[in-house]
Length: 389
Image (cartoon, rainbow, N blue to C red; front, side, top):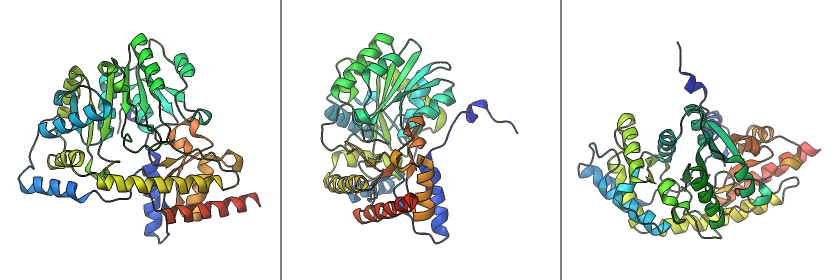
């Protein structure tokens, strides 16, 4: 049977591939320390769960507007307006079942075959995969460790041209934990104005930031008219399985994204959208507790990695990932990641899961207990001692 050429251009995601292998190993009796998947290890706050259960019991189990229930769109608009200092209403917000559909549809709405899409590298693999699927050319923007994994504006200026239709930013960033500054964002907006391209800003980790205030491209005067701001409930509220993402877009873009929704999934889970309203307006105590744990884990994993011979790691400024440099071990990223899983039962991701410039790095998700993190690092140290012997 034949399949479309486009399907051959789409790639998978390393985190889910490694997770599947881990589940098989656990089924065979192996103990695995999971540091590979980008998922908070906390339960969804009870008040959010109760809001969704109430919605089910109230009969909210039917179709809704393809752009999202009005109350949820209004709540998300108010939240984004407050946290990004922007003037928007519900008509600028689209709700979809997770951030990935928003990324996919936004790229489909702005990019033509043959266009160029600038993507962070190392970066979240969906950006490059969807660019390839569309038939566009993904252009990697090398995020360098010596620059704290930020965009280097002089290098960016060399990449931008009149074929550029979209530039993707992700701050705080997966996998590096890097964070863009207001000055970085100002430069990006000025280039977008000069070359007339869209900016897709994946801001799913906006609340998981440590040492500096979160900055959004939407806050740059004038940038909102050519920006797509994406956020959601998965990370901040430990709601990965709920599949709830929302985007702020210009009104004419909203119409196009709704058309994609109509033709793809009709509408987002109706009663789950009650979780947006309760999550964004309800008590934030559980979020504060989660962030306190992430701070402890960040210190533990970075200090522990830097104590291992041949390994060095910057302190991530956001998200919940450590991205250590392992070049001095003499092992490639994939070989070391495989050895850690197969020989130690420690699951992480090779930096190359996030693009060619991820070689020489590993990604560890510190969405796990301090005790498990410390045990994983002990096993990693023992492995590398054996490798040097």
